[in-house]
Length: 124
Image (cartoon, rainbow, N blue to C red; front, side):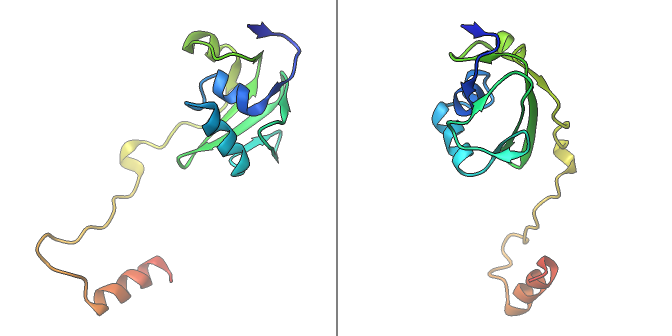
């Protein structure tokens, strides 16, 4: 199950070490440009080997991992954590994200003036 110096497809490896839930999601992330290996955007069939740095964008958060071992089949959480070194920055705290502006209930639709204020704040 664990290979030492072999190369594996990047979409398969990302799925195998549980960075994505399905291999299809891993391949889609590669095609969308959300996966970089050693700083370069890669296609799903790109090969990874031990020592490569893989960056994966997920939900506004970037995972940065260095490949320690290559695996072809999906493994459990314990063995998966041994297959890479996680260099990701800590995720933002729940309170650190700015809350969305909400209108008071029952105030009706925004007026033209309200819309202009919102556009001015957004910089449009």
